[in-house]
Structure formats: C-alpha cells, structure tokens
Length: 362
Image (cartoon, rainbow, N blue to C red; front, top):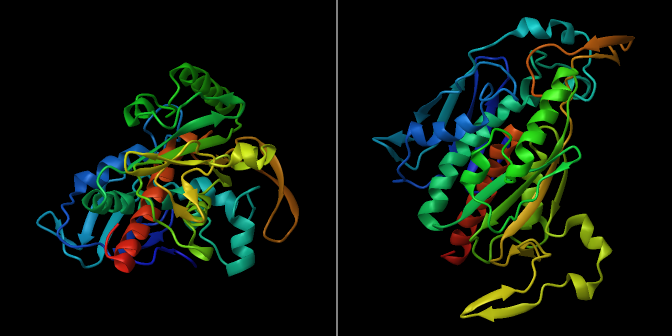
C-alpha cells in the first residue's frame, strides 16, 4: 500500500481511523531545527473534528506526541516519529458497514484489491489519515522557513456548491481566512455558506466545493522537467487527499477559451527581477516555478456518507439498502483548507531540498 511521499524529505503515514492512533515517520529532515509539540499542535488544531458547529462532532483532541528525532527542542537529523492517539472511537457505529458497501466509498474497491479492509470508519481511506500529513507539514514549514524564508501558503474556500467567494489570491491574508469557521476569504459569503452547510446537514445530505490555494514568494527554479514537473507533483499531492475530484492551475480549464495571444504571459523586468505581465501559467512554466504566485484549485466532492437510505450491495453482491451512521462532515471544505496547505508545504520542502542538493543553493 503506497503510504510514502517525497524523495529527500520523505514521509510515511500509518494508522486507521478507528485504530489505536495515526502517525507519521519523517526522514530527511535537516538537524538543528527548532521544533516543539506546540508548533505541530497548532496546525493539527486547524484540521481536527469538533472545532465548530458545521463540522463533524467527533470529539478528538488530536494531541500529538513526538516519539523520536527531536532532542531538547531541536531536530537530530534522524527520523522523526509523531503519533496522535484516537480517543473517541465508536466502531459500533459502523457494524452494518462490515457487510454492506457504502456508496462512493472505498469499501468495495479495497475488498476488490486486498480481500480485506478495516471497516471501522473506512480505515486508511478515512480523512483521519490526513492528521499525519498536517503534522509532517508543520515540520516541513520549519525547514522551508530556515532555507527560503518568506514563502507563504494560503488556502481558502473558493466555492461551496453554487456559492462563489470573491477572493484575490494575490492579497488574501491568513488571518482573513481563519477569522471565520467556513474558512473563506470573502466576508460576504461566510453566512450564506454556513447556512447552506447547516441546511444540507439538516436534510441528511452533503455538499461539495472548491478550495483555492496561493503560494507566494516561491523562488524560480523549483520542479523538474518531464515526470516531476512542479504542477504534476502538486496535482498528485492534492488528488491524494480524500474526496478530491479535480485539480487545475493558473487559467485551468478556462484557459481553453483563450487564444495564444490572450493566454501568453509576457516577460518584463522589474528592477533586476524577471516578471510576467499576467499569470495564466499559475506561477509554473515547463514544470518549473517562475517566481510568480503559484495559484491552483482543488475540487472536493460532496461527502459520501449521507443520513438517508441509499441502494447498494453487500459483500455477497446482493442488492440491499444502507443508511449512513456515525459522525461526518456535511461539507469537508472548511477542514480541507489546512490539508491543502499541508500538501503544498510537503511538495515544496522536497523540491527545495532537491534543488539545493543538485545546484548547491535555492
């Protein structure tokens, strides 16, 4: 099972949603970086369940434990192990799912591939696995700050169903996003989005949307031609997040409606820095960052678990019905924001370290 990401800054995640806990091993982190449990915890608190009245009410503190690789507040250069124990486990809520496949979940496909699955809450397919990524990204951010200070990664809810936020990725601030529980950068859309989530949850239904992300102050030169293009790495990372169904960067699909003369980003000089007049490329050209803001969007489907009866089949392939049980987000978007940021940091740190290894500097 593929649970490892990265070439130099390499992470391996482990654990199931209703097992003892989830965690991550980080290899390739430079030594002498200052890192504390609090640095990791503040990022985990942004993705944990139960943080507001529009997310899953599962009661988890998501308290992290640093098991190895850190001594007296500094990294040792050896593998870093981080554990978050599961506390609010309710496997009984999933008993019916042992023999019935939940529509649009990984139940059937895991059985088809492995012949076995952890049916308590989805096992490895659960978004609870993303705790490990967010914890690792807190360490990655420390590495980035030490090598390329000034890089900023800000994600926010761009849309929920038909509701579209008006956000300028070039100026949006982290505090703007964190100031509201839906995590959008448009104050005018906060209440409409919250009302929509509460409405569909009251109907036993769910809703999806789009998270947009901007990476600012990224140096030119990150990424590699052909198979490790920076946008390809970002796309793979984003599409590995549960519930994702689409990725686009820069002009994305809308760019197909433009001519080359309209779409091309013309170069110019700003003092001694190479700039582009427009940014339809989304900050990446030829798979390599060009120094402009990297802007991309990730589509999230409506949460698959809904509290109404749905037709399905059981493990004997007989037709039956199933109603959702347990505690779930009616909309994953608010908690997906820190996940998108985390995956961005993990891709960036690996390419920064690769660039430094190959070229001697970034």
